[in-house]
Structure formats: structure tokens, C-alpha cells
Image (cartoon, rainbow, N blue to C red):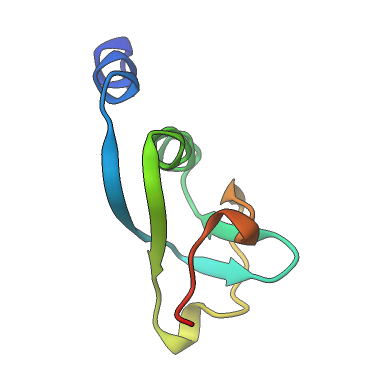
Length: 78
């Protein structure tokens, strides 16, 4: 992820972000396998009014190396 990517995203106002993850854990939140992907998704989350995760059943409880955001930062289906 280059400086131009960070600069561009930092200047965006995002209404809703649908984020794909490799794991979702109650104590660790949204997870991914790639360090740069985690940093990019974290930045997009900061610029977003709402964040939803896109997960299938196999992702619930699955651990991955890098944290994106805590579960409290993700909107679930009520």
C-alpha cells in the first residue's frame, strides 16, 4: 500500500463499507491473513459511517493473523 493509496482513502467520505474478512471472533473482531490488507481495511473503516462484514459460516470463529477492527466497530444484522 503506497502513500497515494493512503492519501486518497484518507480524503474519502464513505457511507457504507461492506468488508470481507477471513475470520470473525467475538474477542478479537474482524481478522485477515495479510498485514497490508488489514491496514488498508482499517483505514477504510475509519472513513466509513457504517461497516458491515461479509462472512459465511466458516468465517465465524476462524482465527487469522492480523486484526482489522474490534467487533464493536462492525454492524450486525439486528
